Length: 553
Image 1 (cartoon, rainbow, N blue to C red):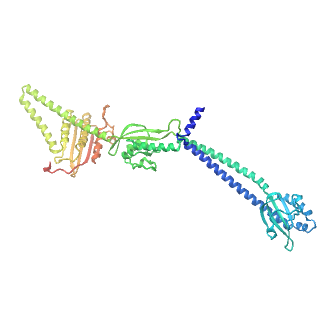
Image 2: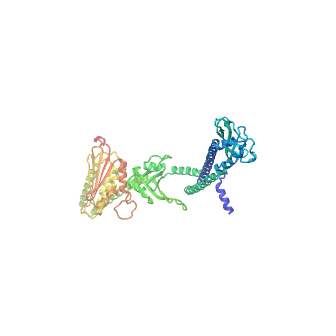
Image 3: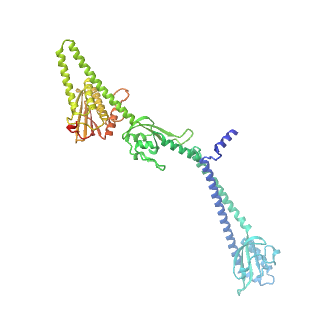
């Protein structure tokens, strides 16, 4: 028990001896103090107001009683007798009891009393102020007399000719007023204590809520934690986005803003609905559904993003539950670009391997014919193959002033023949030099031709054909059309997404080629479209430079 107490004390004091009360504890104490101060102030004000009201009421009662006595004929008749006290004393006592006053004193103008609650005081001078009454004015005052402090009224008594023949003073003792005041004040005090109790309970409930949501931390600790979190948030090299349960982005760091094209955050940013951020549809849906994701690939503009998402929940023991989804973004654009370049090299390598294999078969055939003593047939076969190859080479190289693309198409022709597919090339003879990145062009044409050959080779059409048409339009636009006789694309809208494939097997790299094609087209500022007619037909429009003059080629 003592160890537990020492731990609690140590938790409340920092190494420098400063109080580290939690925000909830501070709020509770502050609220209790405020409610108590307000209650005390209200009680004091009510006590003062009630006291003043009782004093004013006592003054009005005294004035009313004294004024009534001053005009009573019985009093006037008694004053005319040799011994006024004999008749006035019983009259005064009876009137006192009837009017709830503490004293009624009838006196001569020289202060000599005719009546008094204490008979021994009759005949003695009146203690108090009478000067205004002697001048004909009725007045009230609070004065300490023989009976103690009292609120009194003094009124002159006039005869028929208006002369002041006596004075009458009626009053209520202050202790009587206090006796009536305290029950009222006690009621107010009880109400004030009730208000303090209710305020303390409300403050306690609110304090418990704040203790839960702040995890019992103090303001200094919360401030340090906020600074630390902000520093970490802006220093990490991954994009971080927090989406709440209402599909609003409540937090994102600078890297996420750069990756998604969002405005830089300020400290007073309000949550923004996902629909207002202009995100790609598939990425917006991934953010909105709140599901968990692991290394999912999405395209945002010209960037390839790897997205991980996890539900943000309170720590065990807290009852906040889910607060939204935490999403991290990694920029794999350069990595995917390198992957695309590697894919391009693999495409060229495959094309050259197919061409080399075809040339090796032809050479073996020629050697075998010579060994079988058929030199004329060997010469004729070699000449025929040379003519066919030269014609295809002249057609491609003569039209395309880009060695890499020309080599790709030559290699793909050999690969297509190897797989039993006819590759039909329709190249604009005035195509000329293309002012484009050769790597991007190889990525586009190589992947489209590869997919076309695969589709034609595995399709059920009697003719296995892939047609490649390259035309220059309006001088600075290049139109590329790749069509195959395969079975077409089952989902035209999803064909360019990462991971989409119609091929069987779990080979690494499936579903990447067409996504790389779309990225390359977007980087070049072009457009790409796909339809089924009946096989897949891809049509690209790419901006290119003006055609070179004959002397420049």
